[in-house]
Length: 124
View 1 (cartoon, helix red, strand yellow):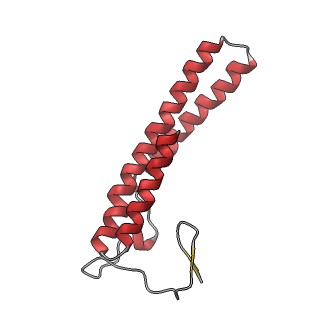
View 2 (cartoon, helix red, strand yellow):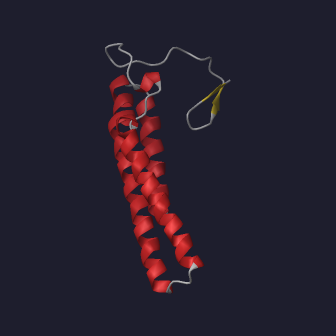
């Protein structure tokens, strides 16, 4: 049995990584994700969001006015949503586009995966 990226198992024997239509190995085949090029920027952004969350803890600890805390909660939430949208865009441009180049059923799986991720983002 093999395990997919999503954690599902398959009885298929492991095969050589699918390649693009020309048979060339892609970044995705080598385990490089869509956000790889922006990794440092993403980490910087996440550290800034982490600082906002720590600021919320401090505000509660210092008995800051409720509305001021809620304003910061809103700003933190928007920052995370913005980060998620950027990551989703990179997933579509890299992982989904890579699956489309390869053809076959992989594109359907990637589109379904992205659709479910969008659904989770919309529920928050």
